[in-house]
Length: 244
Image 1 (cartoon, rainbow, N blue to C red):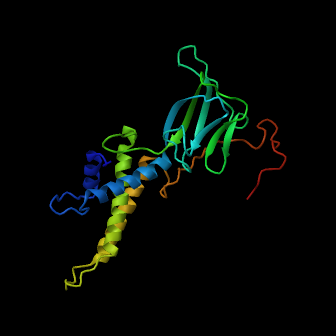
Image 2 (image 1 turned 90 degrees about the horizontal axis):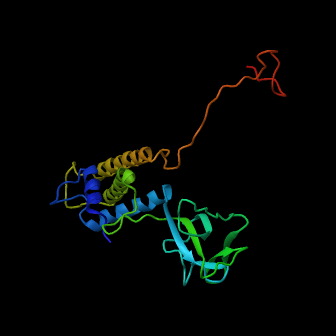
Image 3 (image 1 turned 135 degrees about the vertical axis):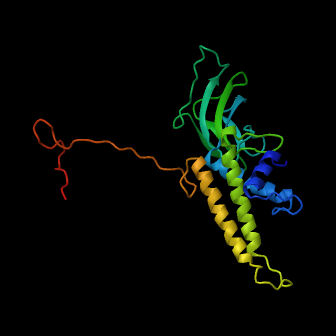
């Protein structure tokens, strides 16, 4: 399904690609491809959280990959379970969740054709509900959009990055033997789009609080502490403080 028209327009605006008669990205498919790549990268940085209620089947196994898989948005190799509540019920003021222990209560098991969620100590029956929270890839189309409104500008910036990468690649492979003019310099165009791509990626990283290379920004904390007792002047530590 096509990307939202608003996203297309926002990407074109960032590229100053406003000439409808002769756009830089001539076809909507190329623009949608850049947006789709951005959604995939964004999903890695901020995965979608999906919560599903599954009915027990009288066995300790729920299929997650293969025929009969129960988790509709599970993507093998990407998704991860965040928590499992069992037995789960309607949420009310007095509801007490029953979180299972990831080390003791459940794990994954594979046979030749499927991957299962294996409950080590329980067998959910057909009258019981298992509530599972897991991560998934976002959807950003004209029919369904799971990207939070607060992250849309970041997604627009990332889409502009992928669009610029595509245009730089296009320039790098372009040549026109029929044009004899010094002003026809595809390498300059390639470099300009590469620079724009770097700028939009940096803007995305800034909006998402990521490092400039796209990885989560590190956190640090500073505090002052005394290595010696204020009353006796003796060191608190086994070894004396280092001196220059």
